[in-house]
Image (cartoon, rainbow, N blue to C red; front, side, top):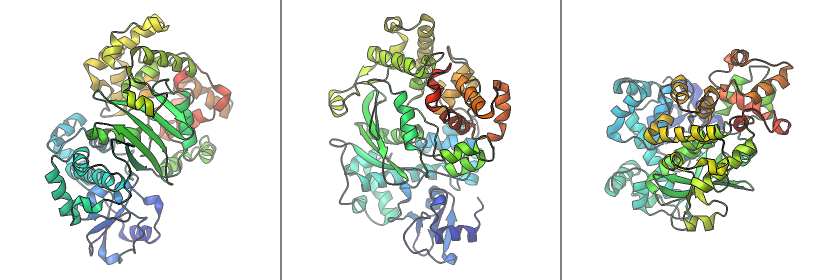
Length: 499
C-alpha cells in the first residue's frame, strides 16, 4: 500500500483524529508503533515508517505503544467497502472462527486460493492473515490485562493463545516484560463479580440516541431491555448463556460489559457487538460520498452520525424479519415476545436477578422447528414459514453466514421459505453487514422518497436513483427511513419501515 510519507507525517504532527484507526506510525529509534492521537512527541520524519494497519506495523517488528494503546483504536481502513474479500476475511478472523493453520480453509470459504488471499492482504492491509490474527490476539489480551482484573490464565485463554506459556513468551518477546507488568492498578471487575468491562472505539460522530431508539422500538420482551442510555440483552454462545450491556463511554467509545462464563467466546462477542452497533463504519467517508446527492445532503447534515443498526444473531434477525412482514413494528414485536416466552430458554437465575426484565435467550432453531406456534396466535402460513426456516438453519447454520458477495448472500437467502427479496436485503443490511444492501421494495422507503421529491417512484426507479450511492446504499436507506419519524410509525413492511 502506497503511503505518501510527507502527507502522513503532517497527519501525525497535527495529531489528526480523523485518521485514527487507518494510519499508524512506527518509530525505528524505539521500535514502537503509535496512533495519530498519541500524546508522545512525534519522532523525526527521517526515523519513521507509516503503516495502514496495526498488523502491518507489528509484522514489521514494531510493538504497540503503551500510551496511545493501538488496541483500542477504531477499526477503520481507507479500503473498506472496496476490498470486499478482505473485509469478509477480517470479519471471520475477528469472529474467532479462524486459527493459524486454517488460513487455507479461510481462503476456501471465500472462494479463492490461499496464495491469492495473501496477495490481497498484502495489498490492502500490508500484512498476512496470520499476522492479523496474531495482532488481534495480542490486542485483546493487552486490553483485558489493562482494563480488567481477569486472571492471566483466563486472559490467555480468552484471547486465543494455545497455552499460558506461549502467552507469556509472546508478551516478553514483544514488550520486554511479562504480561503482569502491564496490568494497571485500577483494573475493574472479573468474570465472577461485575463482568468484563471493555472499551470499544468508533470514529465520531455517532448518533447514539437514534440507535437506542431504533433498538427500543423493536426490543423483544424477555430478551432486551433499554434503561436510560443502556442497552442490555441476553446472549447464547454454543448453549452457554450470558448478558451484555452497552452504553456510551468516553468520546469516541462505547462501553460493553460482558457477563458470560465462556471467556474463549469473547472475540466473537466483541465482534458481534461491534457489528450490532456498526462501530467499524467510517462516517466521514460515507457522508462525503452520499452528500454528493442533493436528495441525501440535507439528511446527512442533520444526522451525520447515523449508523445502520446490526443484529445479535442471524437466525434471530431472520425470524424478526419474517414476523415483521405485512404488519406493524409493535405487532411484530408482540409476536416475537410471545414466541420467546413459549420457545425461549429461561436465563440463569443469577443473570435474571442482575438484569430485571431479561429472562430468556432467543429460541434455538431446533426448538422452534418443533413447537406449536399456532398456540401463540400466529397465522398458520407464517408459522409454517418460520418452522421451515428453523429447520433449514438447524441443518445448515452457514445459510446465514456472509457470502462471497452481496448477490451471493441474497441468492442464498431467497431460497429459504418465507424469505423474499425485501427480507433478504434487510438481513444482508443488519446481520451480514453489507453496506450496499438496499431493500428497494420497502413501502416506507418509497414513502420517504415521495415525501422528499413530491412523487412516488417504483422500486426499479428507486434502484436507478440510488445507483450513485454505491457502495453505501444501506446508509442512504437508513437516512431516508429516519425522515419518517413519528409521521409513519406503521407501514407495509413493518419491521423495517424506520431503520
